[in-house]
Length: 127
Image 1 (cartoon, one colour):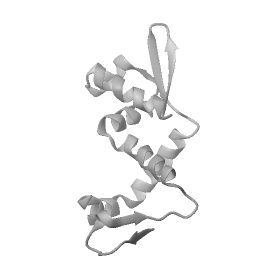
Image 2 (cartoon, one colour):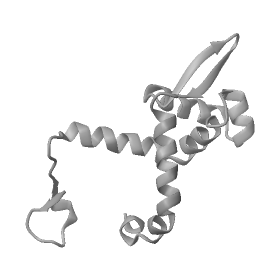
Image 3 (cartoon, helix red, strand yellow):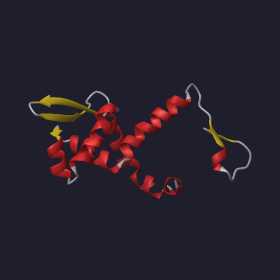
């Protein structure tokens, strides 16, 4: 819910009002979605839905530079989206099965159901 402070024409004057939530909750949710919204991280997440891969395999399949993939994987690991296990000289990356895989499946169902609405939403297109 948003409350307008003053003029309706100044979105910068909006104040986020939450019920039972803190600003930290809002920021955490925003960052969760931001992690997925990045095109490189989204591509890596989409690939890891198939099976676990090493950095080299991810680079080969997606055509990204190793430094770019490693940077994105660090974010995904730090944020709990991806788990990493050492396998000899390679680290193998896999989606977190407890929370991330179910969340992505639910999001995919929502996108499939509301895809046309999301695409047509002028408000989202303007942000």
